[in-house]
Length: 388
Image (cartoon, rainbow, N blue to C red):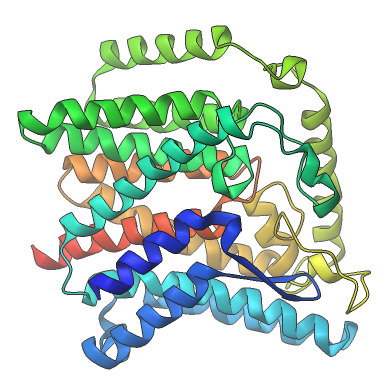
């Protein structure tokens, strides 16, 4: 299992460089293959299927997956078969990623291993992002492939500063946790890691990620009651945001309106679509393929093209799916409130708060790399409860 975990770590770090187009706008990532392999091993060696009924989150996961299937079946009469098939592939991917939660619990690898596994990935991504910022700061040459023309922003191997930003926020929170539980001899190195991730986060110039950091930090401060330290951290971070150099010009300013207006328009269009099919939506996840030819569909870069995870759920699975998904989210964060408030639980809740805020602006909750991070974190917390 450890070798597969290392393989998964490497494939995640490849980012979009590990993307394998399989036709018609469908993309297979290298980590998808590694995850399937990991689940197969968990089933064969650690009897994952037999232990599914004992997993606390199996019912909400199964419910949302079932509602996703229903949304496809209900809408299948409206689409060509290839649209339904491709939509079902995205649903299968979500199920596979959710399976990571079960793998963590049945795996013989310890909670400490998985925490350091996540943390080292985050720092490696931060370092790659900083190298990219100075060596390859311009993504405008890939505009013809569907990528946004980011200029002088950290986008690392994911080629998107917004998604890199939320992963760096999660990295900072996790490494702050490691700082407090580590021995003194490791704290200098961990502090250096926090500094690297923070600088990389600032250089994403991602306003959604900045807000996610403040939301997560505010949640941690509220849980710990350390208001003075929290206010100080918040002020320093805000000053850094304002005064950090902006070599990319006005496109990096905090008050840029073009992307804001575009995002508001996207929300409005999505809400209109939800109103047209409110119960089961358009089907999970067929929206990227609507109005396209089977053989000429362009590679998808933003899920269903919806700038909000909640609206994404609403438009693809309707109100029924939205209720099911919200139940899943509530069940995910429940242990943090009913269990003893340990540092791990504080990081857990703060990370969820950050991702939920970030998901208001981009589809973070369904972004593969964020899904891996959060399902591993969910599994670690659940494993902690099971082992106590």
